[in-house]
Length: 320
Ligand SMILES: O=C(O)CCC(=O)C(=O)O
Ligand SMILES: [Fe+2]
Image (cartoon, rainbow, N blue to C red):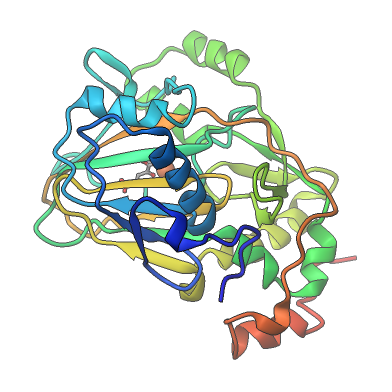
């Protein structure tokens, strides 16, 4: 049973996809990314990504150029303005953690939502894994939205929230950036307002599109009411039912759809090294539409507390 707007006919894909959990994650086999992909393979990956929200690939001993070539099949590539890039490769984000630089991506988020047009997808490759730990978790934001208590959904449909890159400002100051440089970055990357519930441009499905890393407040609410509502939305990502968890090995890759899921890089391997590189595909401006495919909740695989809360009157979120 699939709760997805598109129903992938697995037989039509030119490779095998093994689901990682009920609604999210799929491990792709029989694909060697050292070779250029043909149209059928690119279409197959697009289809499988829309269905599974994140795809995993194993044993891809590829060069940086091959990583970039793979990503270019899915759109133009992004250059991250704040985070360190790999020498000579502005489009490759180098994420290195070790004894002196412990992991810090261990908060649920979708990438670069502080941009007016946040990234469509991120393609991460592991160069050096810790002996154990350093998994990345992914959470299905369609499931998180579909299963929200009705009362919460009514409050957030059609609302917008402000996003900001505050965490990067802190890191830039720590690396010695001047206040003038920060002011220039503030001008170049003005705080966008994105819908709290985003309609996916390809599947039409709705998903939660706020995250604790970059969202500041919901427009039109006072800070206390906004904080109360945001904390309910942020908690959704933490439901294990909506998640899958990927255990890396050297040369593993993950390709996630930032429009449909959030991710969290577990930071549990200090003082070991963990080296990953990310290539990111540019996305479009998020929007919200009221209509779209409706999930039949009678068929939802999520029962018990989740189903009870969905139907419950909901928490008393507002002072007034
Ligand atoms: O290191 C990871 O597994 C993910 C880090 C992250 O948040 C990212 O690359 O966007
Ligand atoms: Fe990220």
